[in-house]
Length: 550
Image 1 (cartoon, rainbow, N blue to C red):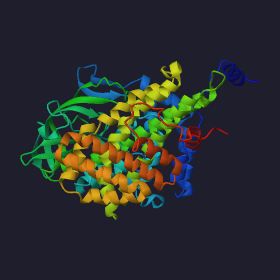
Image 2 (cartoon, rainbow, N blue to C red):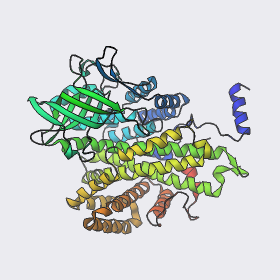
Image 3 (tube, helix red, strand yellow):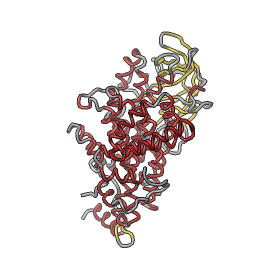
Image 4 (cartoon, rainbow, N blue to C red):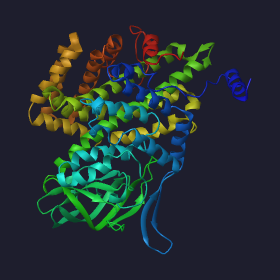
């Protein structure tokens, strides 16, 4: 018996389960396997490789090191010269290199034959699986992918920048963008005085040439400051405009960006977020000089999808570890997972994870179909803020509950659970907090109910017999919001629960969908997990969604 086997035997004698690693995150997730069953073998094989990678001890170690060795800002060099560079741990670069080779920053735009008409959905699977490993490095990849939605507003800029953005060769060198094999793109929207209210931004932009402006001002939050360019907002004479701002000029000198400090964040620690001031900084205008919000919202919409996907992925990984632990640990004479209350807690959480994942993938699918389907266009417009709101909001509480299932073993830094827990709140805050998402839904409602009626057709069809009653409840919530803006969150949450249940039914998850619908939409208000009653077979739910290892 080798040393490893002796160690495992000793841990078993001490009632300590094996570490949760080496479990294929793709193959062990029946929901994702079912969703991808119609995709090509090449794609399913790719997901299989990625699923093995994200739970491997080697990848988990990279995630740990990247978060324990956070980025550092170097504002000046030894001669007093401005540097304005951010140094990252080598593990960060390893994670970036692997994820860019997987196309997380580019695949939605590549028009690959095998991903045609499902590029967003295919990328969503990749993103969801990678989120189960480490989410900090996903931030620049999200913004890089989404940036193309804004950059397309300027065909000249798109022609020059798109090939570099779409390259899968990670290039971390500190050189001008045109000298690099690949570039990443960050984002700068919020300012000290405005925050979410970007119309209050005071940064200015003055036209100095065809499509070129000189910017002056600041950004209170600018994520991924070592990106090669940033999509930024600034005021022109005509109104608020959107710009692509390179970090370095063609000769390698700084483009007027001065990083003040890096944010000391609760989570998302492997990724850098900065405060920046800028003067005489050149940028390329994207779209019309008074259409900045409309232009950048195309980018923001895609980032909101990623927020939901990342939260769903973290919830899946956290609960998978909790289930693994409770199956391998005995308490009061039998496996912890078989204790009645623990079974119900885990099954209750499993319903939310399945619903959140299904809803996020359905939203990605709507993005793929929106151009050719009015129903999917309506779904994408309304459900983007709704999914972002609900999926991201339930993540912190669910991950905490998963942590509690491990007891003190879950409250230590050696496990990924602690990292997921710190990471979870950022997705609910980034790219629009809960109230901003609710206001976005109200904006659609204020323009008319046509899009809602198209959405209701989809939901009623997929919900089946319960559809009519559910839609009546949603219409009542809409009417209330027309009279009382403060009730918007009620509508948003009801929409999320109804759409999640509808998608579970559409996927054929009958008993899972029934349990989710009855416990979420037909039951009373609940604030903790473990509230499933005996009508639902908790052990069946758990074993179906988290199959025991064979």
